[in-house]
Amino acid sequence: MTFSPLTLIGSLLLLSAVGMGLAAPIPQDPIYHDYGDQRIIFGIPYFWNVVSNLPMFFIGLYGLREAIRRYSERPEGVARLIPLVLSGGIYITCFGSAYYHWKPSNDTLLWDRLPMTFMFMSLFSLLVYDYLGKKAGTLAFWTSIPAGIGSVLYWHFTEAAGQGDLRPYAIVLFFPMVAAPALMLFYPGKTTYVRLVAYILGWYVVAKLFEHFDKEVYQLLGFWSGHTLKHLTGAIGLVYAMKVVDGWNPAVNKA
Image (cartoon, rainbow, N blue to C red):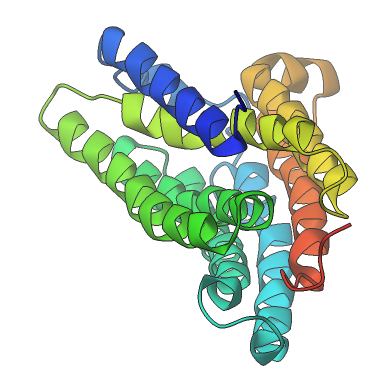
C-alpha cells in the first residue's frame, strides 16, 4: 500500500483542522499592539516598525516586474498567476503593514494580515503545483487564496462582535510551514529549489522569534526592537522567495 503525498497533505490539513476545532476560540490579545519601540521620529509614530516595511516595497516591485516580463513563458493557468499574486502580496503588504504599525489596532491589523495571506497561499500553491502536479496546484491556488482571505475576515468580524477567533487564520498561517517540509521530505530532489525553500522557512522562524521577543530585543539593543528586526529578517526570506519564482517554469523546473 502506497502512501501518496496528496494523502499526506490531506492528513496534515485534517489534523490541523481537528486540532483547531477542539481548541477554544482564540481572540486577539490586546498586548499584541503594545510594541517595545514606540518612538516618534520625523512625526511618524512607531517609526522603525513603520519604515522597516520598506524592503517589501522593492522586493514586491521587482517580483511584479519579473512576473509580468516572464508571464507568457510559463504554462497557461495558475502557473502564470502564482508569481503575480505572490509578488503583489509582498508589494501590498508593505503598505498594509506600514498602515497598521502607524496606528496599531485590530481595525488596522486587518490590512496587515489580508495581503500576507496572498504571500503564504501563493507560495504554498507553487509547491503543490510542482510536487503534486498541475491539477493539485490549480486546486490549491483557487481554494487556498479565498480560504486565506476568509480566515482574516472571519477573525475581523468575530473580533468586532466581541468574540474574536483566530483559529482559521492560525491554520492558514502555519499549515504551509508544516506542509512544505513534508513535501520536500516525501519527494527529495524533485525540484531544484529545495535549499531556497529551507532558507525561506529558516528566516521565517528567525523573524517569529524576533517578534516574540520584541521588547527584550529593544531593551538589549536600545535602537531597534525585535519587531523591527522581524520585518528585516522576514524580508530576507522574501528575497529567497523571489529567487524561487524569478525563473520558475513548471515545465522545466524539475531537478
